[in-house]
Image (cartoon, rainbow, N blue to C red):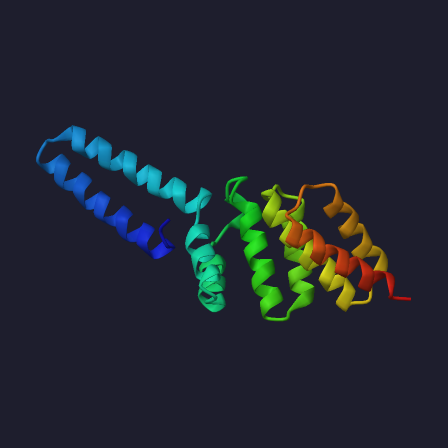
Length: 171
């Protein structure tokens, strides 16, 4: 749950502790410091600042969330649990910024990557709504058919029914 800058700072401080421990011949502390440095490096690539970005998104600070997500240098190295949420958050931020083409790309990746059911329902609603805006009836109805396969809360089901009605009105 660190930003990339905080990870670098913690890694640097641990390196100082390791060097100090080696000079004082306390090798156990040095070994632990190197172990923690490895853990920080692992977190840098596998975890990233996804949780911080999600908190910023929840607080409606979309620019800060987007900056945190874009600070991830190699998103392909994110863990299987983090990668869908990376795409999901970028897609939702793009929806809020009314960049529907980018939102559709990220949300489609997120929908096929393994989101939790509630987030998958929100993703599918966004995708159906984007297709409604683009007057793409067939693609929108396909997303609604996908949504019917998963258990969704009543609120999301009613939204999807309204979207389906509006999609059927497209000629």
